[in-house]
Amino acid sequence: MQTVKTLQMLRTALAQLRGGSGARIALVPTMGALHEGHLTLVRRARAEADHVVASIFVNPKQFGPNEDLDAYPRQLAADAAMLEAEGVALLWAPDVTAMYPPGFATNVSVAGVSEGLCGAARPGHFDGVATVVLKLFNQVAPDMAFFGEKDFQQLAVIRAMARDLDLTAPHVEAIIGVPTVREADGLAMSSRNRYLSPEERAAAAVLPRALADAAQTITDGLQPVWLAKAVVEDELQIAGFRLDYIEVVDAETLAPIEALADRPARILVAARIGGTRLIDNMAINPAV
Ligand code: PAF
Image (cartoon, rainbow, N blue to C red; front, side, top):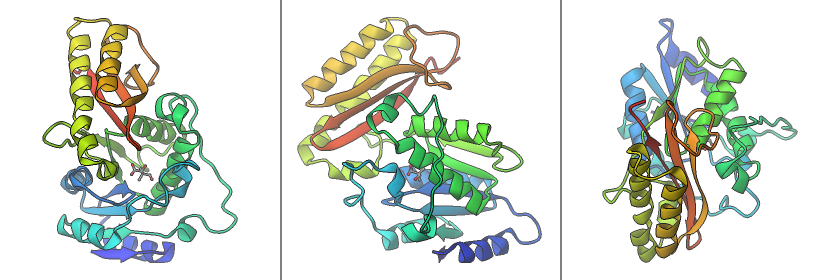
């Protein structure tokens, strides 16, 4: 696996990878601090493309002023070893100046899907995500790109941006969402789980359990949406969480819904335990 840190080196390496035969390239964008969730994206990407390009870039534009940019774990050598072991061909690991040279002045903002949920609690976050993902798409020009469903709103924002800016086929042929990878007790894998104390980590298992129960009771029509959300809120409060939001939304538009229609829906939650903000989501009526 080759690691490149400048756009010039990236372009040369990509030209070599593509060769004359037009080999198909998959992109797995990450911020590093890799775990099994990221490696699952890489494995899916390997199964679908000839070569996998991974990126590691801790994107300052998606962190708010009081967020964990400085504390965000950085472990490039360990991450590179994991990616190499998974058969990644090329690692794009620019520094901040390579990604945002002096004078960089563009912001990509996707209205609608960015606005509620995490967008409300983290102003500017999804602009930062959309801006860097658009740059990554332009830099790597992948045939397909892989993102985890754990960041469900992020995936919706990226899909909306790709649709609106005509980044879909034949440019980025597919944006593929990969189901969340979970620990044995159900907690969604996240680079931020390492911030949890042992007590917080034990309590955190309540979050996926409460969410799964709510998703099931709503799907089965046993409780109205408002009641299922209130039950999750109570369970999280008892476990020591401070709720940021719990919402049931249309899976595509992310518009809140109060009753199930004949369309896929999703229940999403964000809550803080100690100093750590956890997010999770699950499908409702997955059979639709
Ligand atoms: O999900 C992430 O790790 C980041 O938001 C992404 C998509 C790599 C953009 O920085």
